[in-house]
Length: 306
Image 1 (cartoon, one colour):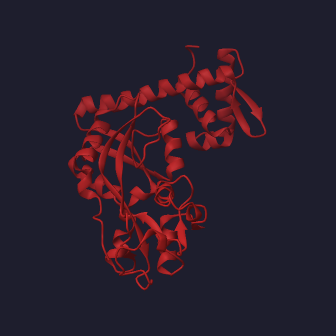
Image 2: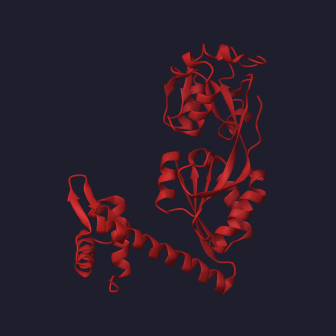
Image 3: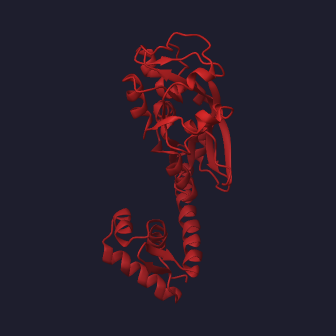
């Protein structure tokens, strides 16, 4: 068992994630036969099959699951050791894998730029995905820090507030409701909403807003794949939408979208800096976390009013 190499452990971990020889080969920069040889050598060393070959791909056996878990721990510890030794050598070097849900892409780059000016020796790898993708990266220990709203409750996480996250209803400037004051929630029932996917923070906020009007909640409107497509559709007059104010600040400032004055809005949520609860953060990760929670709010777009 002690003769397992780091290359074999990396191949085993990647195979458990991808389930495919070719995908692991692409991830590790190897050929398919080389990955197969690594797996066979590991199985020979352990004396047991680590993966079952199925139509859906490679699936870890019971022994394989134990080896994959050990590989995760070893490789993550080595990753942490790399950051720790870099920090010890210079006191300023390191690398942070920062994840963010898609809505955060409108302001996170400004935060990263400000942090990098202060810590030029710290490399920030920025990974954006929807909520499901981001949570999956957290589960697989692929991120050190995450900018998101509503941290998942089923994972051991630590979270600290970055700043306020308001949600507003937007419409085209020529919409009949634009410019009206204190629009009643019941009036919105007559409008077609353009929606993010189910499970997103934006969709959940809208569901909660209409919780006392089930006839609307069950038939909200038209699903669309991204904030950008929703904004374009609203500008084209296809409907209205509830979106993060940070998503639409630029368009409202340009006069391309209007924020409607609706009772009970804006819905105020929070942005969080989330870290896996069982991970010892590197010096670089601690520096970025402290920056995000201490100064990140200054880089959030202001709630624009039309």
